[in-house]
Length: 179
Image 1 (cartoon, one colour):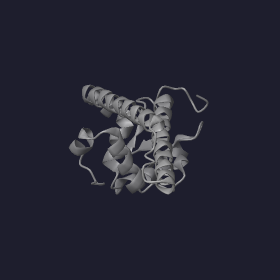
Image 2 (tube, one colour; image 1 turned 45 degrees about the vertical axis):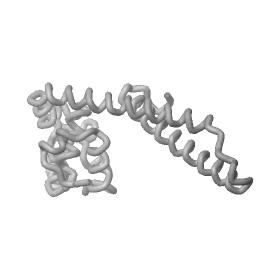
Image 3 (tube, one colour; image 1 turned 30 degrees about the vertical axis):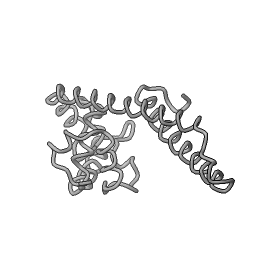
């Protein structure tokens, strides 16, 4: 997979590909996330140099375009508050881009959610079929034990994927960690 994306390429990708690009290539990984956010009641004179440092961190990042696309899809940034930096853009710049690209972003967000829902349905179906399947024991006791262990591992992996997707969907829906 390409990590450094052009804006048209990032716009065409699904959320998972974009997130993977950010997770694997962002230069801000390991930095304190607070570097990119203005503290409550922080004076503009204190924030501006920090904001400029954050913008410099983003400037050479190979995941910048993917990060910007995710920020736009997630609705980050407000027009009336200079309180964050993401993908080399300030909050007002992100808000302005969201307005300019509103129609495209609505289609992209809907496609992300549809693809995710379809993936969740497919994984859930596969999990249920795998969990109730009787492992092949025709090769004897040892072969049957290996088949059962492989089936159990697959059930755990599928369950983890289902939980991950559900948690992400719940978080986006505002359910919070307790849900």
